[in-house]
Image (cartoon, rainbow, N blue to C red):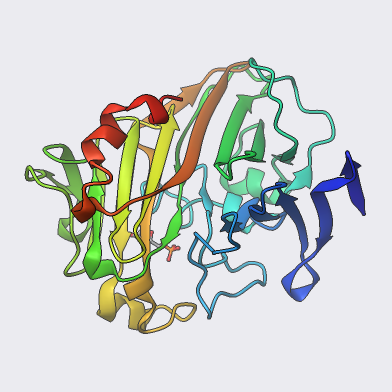
Length: 322
Ligand code: TA6
C-alpha cells in the first residue's frame, strides 16, 4: 500500500524479513530509512548515495521474542539491568501499531517522510509492569537525509499512581574500523563503568578511542556528540533532547563470540552510542507526558585534512545550529 505525495512515495507500508510489517521512508534526494513494527525499531538508514549508516548484524534474528541485533532498538521502560524487568525492558520485543491519530506536535514540520507508531500496555506487560501508558514514536527522515526519533510517553493511569522508567535509543552505528573511530563530546565527564560494577569514574581529557571492550554510561552529557569515522571520512552528529546521559558500547572479541546473533568479527564495524536517561529515572504522574528526541546526521569529514574540527561540530558552527 503506498501513500503518494506529489507522486513521490515518501512512505511505504510493506513486508520485511519473515513477513514482518515494516515501513520504508524515502526522500527525493535518495536517502531512506526502514522501521519495523516489531520493536518499533529502525533497522536501516541510508544516505543519498544508498550507503547504509546503521549496523545490522548478519546474524540478527527477526523473530519474536528475540530483539533485533542492530539499527535502533528502544530500551523502555528499563535500560539494561537497571531494574527488575528483562534486559532493556520489553518495548523492543513488542509489536507496535501505526498511530493513526497522533496528537499534534508543538512545531509544525514540512517533513513528508515520517511515520507515527504507538505502543500500549498488553495484559501480559501489565503483569510485569502494572502501569497505564501510551508510548508514541515518530520516525522522520528529513529532506537532507537526517533521521529524527521523537518519543512521547504519557501516564494514562486513572489510579492516581505515578510511574518511573529509564530509557535509551540503543543506536548501532556502522563504522569502517572501530580502531580508527573517535568519539568527541564526552571528554572529562563522569561515567559509570558497566565492566567495573558500575563504579563511577571521570573520563580523561581527550576524545574516546577503542582498543578493547567498552560499556560506559556517561552522565549529564552535552546535547551534541560526534562520532568520527576516519577511514570513511564521515562524522556522525548525534543531537539529543530530554536524554541527559549517553551510553558507549562495543563488545569487542570475547563478548562478540558469546552473542548468538552477532558475528565474531562484527565488533570491528559497529559502535553503539546511545542517547539515554539512566542515572535519574523519569517519573510521570497521571496525565503527565515526557518527550525524548534524537536527531542523527552525517557530515563529510577528515579530521586530518582539517576540513572538520570536531570542536566546531560540538560548539556549533553556522552549519550545525538546529
Ligand atoms: O547498552 C549497552 C548494553 O547495556 C551492554 O551492557 C550490552 O549488554 C548491550 O547493551 C547489548 O544488550 P543486549 O540485551 O541487546 O544483548
